[in-house]
Length: 176
Image (cartoon, rainbow, N blue to C red; front, side, top):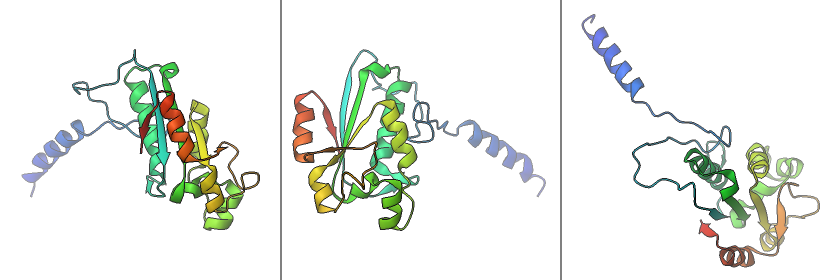
């Protein structure tokens, strides 16, 4: 048995030395990334990144909406890759089954019977400069009153059907 202890320790040290170094450099606590120096495609700091996320899922990753998490990861990847904040323009429109993520603290608790797990991440994304929108048609379909139910960090738009081509005409790439 004692013969295996050194082997176990060497194996443990080897795996620890090669463990991924996950980090969340910009959006603290969300959208963790690993940097690879030898990646063949990396962000170009000279480029302007204009991204529109269409958030339609209520699936979660690490306790928050997976699409919001993906926005955080994208920002972390871009800035970690040397892209200056002034070259990163991110917007998102929420519709369909994702609509409850835009509810304010009280309404979410009342309707969903649990606290809104996205509030901290929403605060951090908006503080960064991400424009978060709720599709007005989704609000109507999901019975969300924009004056009383909506998180004040979220802006109401007419429709995702209008938002998407409007952002495209402004040079944004759509990420679903």
